Every structure is written in C-alpha cells, then in structure tokens.
Image 1: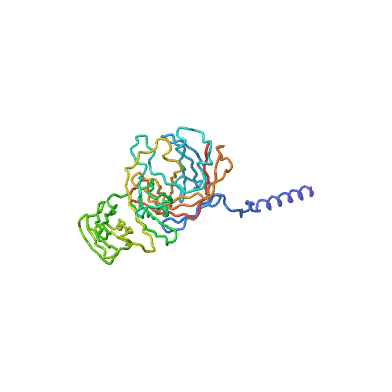
Image 2: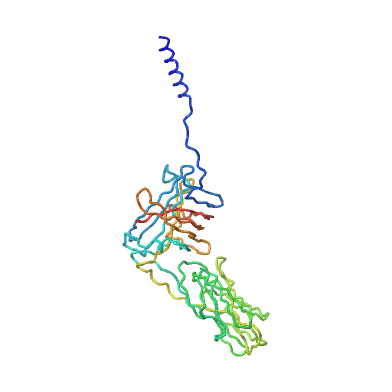
Length: 384
C-alpha cells in the first residue's frame, strides 16, 4: 500500500511540473527575407518583408478582358486584403494576347526600364499610342560633322535628322551635341512638351548679316535675346535683327505669357555671315507628327501597374484613366530577374528585384494622390 501511495504521489508531482512548464516556441529566424519592399510614402518610411509581422508573398497569373496576360505579385498581411501597407505589382504582357501559354518568359520579365500602363490597350482603339517628333539639326551639314542626340527619355541617335517616338505625354529635355574634328563640341538643349499650349520654337532666314525670325506655336508675346547684346520684346509672329559682324550667336526666344507650368524658352546657335572662327554651331528644330493609333497586338508589352493599400485602407494605383504619367518624375526599373520555386497553386514564378517611384491615385477619389519612392523591392510573380 505504501508503494502504491508513493507511485501515486510521484505521478501527481510529475504532472504538476509538466503543466507548469512553458510551451516551447520556434526559434526566431535570422535569415534575410526573400521578398520585401523598402519605400517612402509621402515622406514616411514604410518597409515590409515577407515572414515578418504576418506579411506574406502571394503570386498569381490572370488573363484580362482583352486577352492580356497579367503576371502579379502581392506583398500583404495574411489577415485581410485591405490591411495596411500592401503592395501589388502587375506586369502586363499583351504581346501574347489571347495566348494562355507564355513560352519565352525571360523576354517578358527581364532587366530594364518599364513604362507604367496608361490604358492604351483598348478594343475600341480610342486611345493614342504616343507622339512622334521629327528633329532637324540646324548645324551646318557636312562629312566632318557628327551629331549626338539625347531625347530625354533614354533614347538616343547619331543621325543628323532623326525621328523619335515618345510613349508617355510628358516634357522631355532634348539635347543635341555637334562635333567637328579640331573644334570643341557644342551642345544645345530645349524642352519639348506634348502640351500644345506650351509648345513653340522659331525659324529664320539669313541674308548676310540680316536675319528674319518667325515663330511657330501657341505663344503670343515674345522676348528675344539675339546673342549680340540686343534684347527685344515683341508681340508679333516675326521680327528681324541686323548683326554688326559675322559670328556664331546663341539666340533665345522666351514666351512671356505662358503659365508657370510651361517651359518657356527655345534656343539655337546661328551662323551669321562669312564666319571662319574656331567654333561650331548647334541647334535644331522639330516637327510634330499626329499620334498613331495603338497597336492591336503588343501595345502593352513590358508595362506595369503598381497598387498600394494605405494604413487607413485606402487603395491607390499608378493607373488612372484620367491622369497621365510623366516619365521624368516616375520610373520603374528591374535590376535582376530569375526563376523561383512554384507557388502554392503549382504555378511557376519569377523573382524580380528593382526600384520604382511614381504618383499613386486613389481608386475612389480622383483628387487624392500620393507619391511613393522605393529604394528597393524584391517581389515574385506567377505565370502558367
């Protein structure tokens, strides 16, 4: 009997010790998160990472109403779709329109700069694909001259008279550098705008030292600097200047009535008279070609949409049908792209690393926008 009581007391004591023992938790992981976004939202730092604070990476693939493949990745809390600070990046690949299989994903998701989707993929063909400008170098033509153009959107050319296609409606700082062996190169830059109310330039006819100027575009009041210490303000479309001696003069036309949103100067070097000095002239004019209709097949190739859910639940997106992006202030870059393991749905995925900055628009309030700039993102997307 004593043995029985002793065994009973021993079992009871062990059960009490076991009940009071704390439940062991998994060891915290010190590994760096695979997926993350480090950003600044309207001046406030917002950094989230998969595996921390209940945030996870979700990847998916879908086909939209136009038959465009949309490859998406979402970094958000597991608790709800409207939880604070959630990012979704979607890559649109309309080159494979009406095709459920993407055969060469490495050509779709690759290193480079991407445009933000601006709604040009429409069945009705109602939107415009972009703007084409024909540029003409003013610098004297000749076999010894070389030309280097920077079109302000990453495009370049070495032709004397190139044409360039701008996809996004924005202001672009176009620069032309003219070179000739034995002479210092000369560069001229002018801002080219897609806004017809802000677009203007000047042409000229030269008869020895007498130059007749005439303006093209919308401004109605002009201030001239002829480059020879002669300044003139006129309100007409034409004016003249008689240069006292031959030379190369940088002429500036300023529009004095443009609103503050316009870039209101246009410059060009003019070669006057029988100049034989040791410098070259640089200058150009441009001609506007009416926008072309969107391409039915691949107008959305390598375009992205980024969505963001704020801490108050408001949803913002880089896509807004009534707001166009200026690529000068907005950018999206992929710095690395590589295959990753399949997601929970069995779909193949890609891991992409890069950065972006852009205006985001409230999807329910067109007057509400925020500016987000990321120092780095690593996110995944899925494809079939």
